[in-house]
Amino acid sequence: MKEHSVEIVVNGERHHLTVGSEMTLLEVLRDRLGLKGVKEGCSKGECGACTVLVDGRPVNSCLLLAVEADGKEIITIEGVERDGQLNPIQEEFIEHGAVQCGFCTPGMIISAKYLIENNPDPSEEEIREAISGNLCRCTGYVRIISAIKSAVDKYSMR
Amino acid sequence: MIIPFEFEYFRPSSIREAVDLLSEEDSIPIGGGTDLVPMFKDALIKPGKVVSLKNIPETHGIEFDGERLSIGSAVTLTEIAENGVIREHFNSIATTARNVASPQIRNLGTIGGNLCQNLRCPYYRLGYPCHKNGGKKCFAIGGESRWHSIFGGKKCFAVNPSDMATILIAHGAVLEIAGRNDTIPLEELYEGPGELSLKKGEIITRIYLERRENSKAIFMKFRLRGSIDFALVSTGIRIDFDGNEIEDASIILGSVYGTPYRAINSEEFLKGNTLTDTAITKASELAVEGAKPLKKNKYKVKIAKTLVKRGLETLRGG
Figure 1: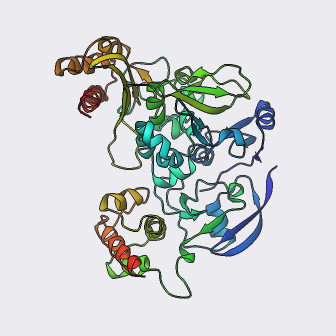
Figure 2: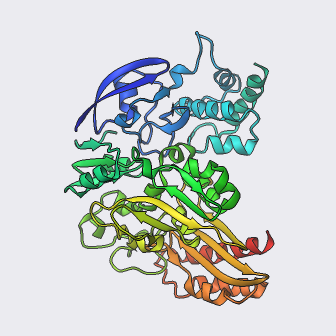
Figure 3: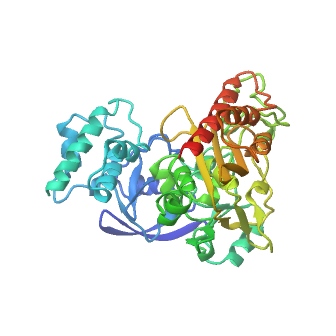
């Protein structure tokens, strides 16, 4: 079959879509659902700019065929805030100046969200490992790591 | 970047159905797709039918009965890295999985896909008309050969990049292949650069290995970047001890040859020996005996030797 009917839940909203076999989840999120916060960088799984959570786990949406996302729950950067309130990770990225050009930021925040929600007290080594699939060409990572550390503290106080 | 051609996609729920689909012309199996999807985007492979192996019950699950470990071919690298039983009884395998690619890729990529992954030679991946792309030369010869084979080759000098293959071969892993009565040693999967012994329609369903008494194993990987980088050299080493004496040794080097490379001279030397400083030095030298590096990759010989040395030292110590 070249076309497939898929049902995906994106940021809490259910979508029924017809997708071609050759479409990636990234194309569906950006071009069909207009979620432009999901960035396309290398398109080969190397840079992590397109990272989204699929059933709770970070994956490169550029590598996942859309048909394989059928039945899955997806969280993009657009789904990280709640009722207009930024997530602590987003707040700390701003606070620490962890954003320069901003292209890697959505993927970084998704990877950090997975880490903090699954490991409430990560070491610096674990933070580095968690974002090891997200390339940043501007910051040198120092501020990103300090932002994630501060977000860990904020999460623990929530 | 889009996939610039159309194909049919199938997600069979039984081995039978998968084998039937994969017996058809122009079909290929797909696991997590982390290797294949980029190749589709570059139109290096243009199948008419893509058959997912992820919806077949037999390709899932990790089981251990105290003696034999069984891993489904569609198990992800994350599942292997995080599995409690593997971490307890086969920690070198969990460590290897954790050192492959990035968290995002490990969440998608399967063990079957890792073992069957394609070559990373940049000439091949960039579509140069090399042997693998239907041309008549290897551009690494006389060109950029820093990533290539240090143990020679025939036509193609690209290396097998699988980290998992090194440690699993070192552990004596065997493969269950749908349609075959007997398992085959994982080592026999590899016939040459980018060449597997699987016939059309054959799929790997499970990987098995036995727990050994008094055995220690380690995986070492040298790469330029600390994360999401392929190995320049990797090694999976397993040593079975009888007291201090080495009863059996398995030393497999990755990313140095067209297939995973068994350092057989080193293994033979170690049997019956003990891990003294002298023996470790000798074994590491024997591991690269007969190396035939290309113009720009002599450095990999040193790295391979050093990895084996450090691996054996670590096994002796811990």
